[in-house]
Amino acid sequence: MFRDPVQSLEPQPRPSVDAMRPLRVGMIGMGTVGAGTFRVLARNQALIAGRAGRSIEVVVVAARNLARAAGVVGTDVALTNDPMQVAKHPDVEVVVEVAGGTGAAREWVLTAIAAGKHVVTANKALLAVHGSEIFAAARQHGVAVAYEGAVAVSIPIVKALREGLTANRIEWVAGIVNGTTNFILSKMREEGLGFAEALQQAQALGYAEADPTFDIEGVDAAHKMALLAANAFGMPVRFADAQVEGITRLQGLDVACAEQLGFRIKLLGVARRREDHGVQGIELRVQPALVPATHLMAQVNGSMNGIMVKGDAAGVTMYYGAGAGSEQTASAVIADLVDVARLGGTPAAQRVPHLGFHAHAVDSALAVLPRAAVHTRHYLRVPVHSAQKIEAVGAWLATQQVPVLQVQLARDQALPPGTAPQVLVLTGAAAQATVDLAVQALAAHPAVAGPVVALRVEMLEG
Figure 1 (tube, rainbow, N blue to C red):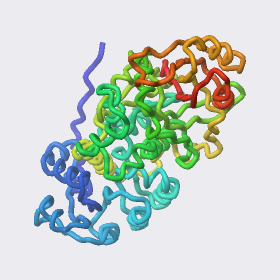
Figure 2 (tube, rainbow, N blue to C red):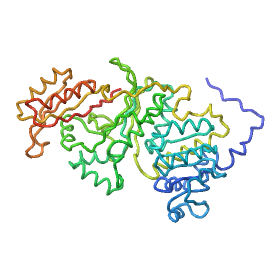
Figure 3 (tube, helix red, strand yellow):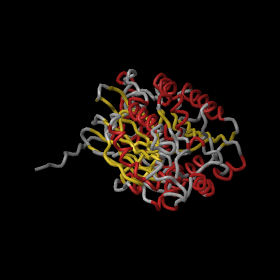
Figure 4 (cartoon, rainbow, N blue to C red):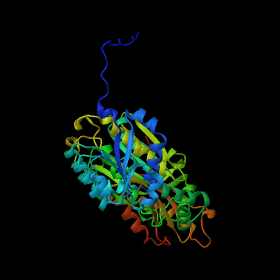
């Protein structure tokens, strides 16, 4: 049936000198991620070299605290407190930027690129804000910019989109891509904590920073979703156009009511191609959303991340892993270094593109849809003066072009003492503009006893 290939008797070419010598790396940042990267490189150096085809050697490190950095890297690695020395270092072929920030980091990265050095970074904010400029500079100078560690830590989702799913027309990407908020929401559901108390626990355990704003306001997740959308749909990085809502205003009452309805609330990032209802473009958004409690995404708890991708050929695929951690992020950073080590003399035009599509194929006209055009199901929680008003709420919504699928009263055990009766509504899919108008008008209805809460519902169906 099959025949073994005929083995040539001619001498096989030896690896080039470049392929045999170590890949020389300079690191900017020796904090949690930098230290983890150095430790994993040292611990698994033979294994990594066997996969890369050459060893990977850190030759210089820039750090704020040189004494602490010396305790990690030892005496064989040069140390400096000036990142520009790493970016310009004549012996460095790859700069690993894991210091964070968007201002100074941009200068370091662009300097390294101009000097002909490849860049590996775990800095999602840098690429979300300055990615277009950085990727254009990298193309001009023929170097690679790799950033797997910037998106979902231990989950190789960038590689999955750019390589594993390259045959697919991607329809949507959705995921839990921030471990801090997922930990907080898990505590609110499992232990009945309020947001502030759950946040305190996250900070005490090191899951949340002293200033957790980027996490809890959804900005970190939006940085990541902007990069995923670019890889999924062949569009520029459009972080500035993303609709972002965090979890700071989420009430424990809604977490409990969602459970009654068979849902769980997650901070969900969504990038969805839309070509329906006379609308064409990309939904790019982050918001707390209800997910069916039986869905795999609802089982992603604690600080873990989970991402789903729907492709026209592959169908739905799911990726799960740690959403934070020193060596977990290091795993992705080193995988990028291995990819760079394998490049050898590969021409830039034959490499995997930075955003999954070669520059001429990126659709700069592909727009992010405005909030009003987003089309989803919704959950509404409507406080009423009397439990008998449940029928009035459902009937009134039906007249507002909002398809109503389910209306019921929240069970008493979910309500704090003294709380007004709560009508819970699940709607069918409708444009956000329609739902916003209905909610605004509903708040003025005589049966309604207070502000109406509206959250999106994501079924994540294949």
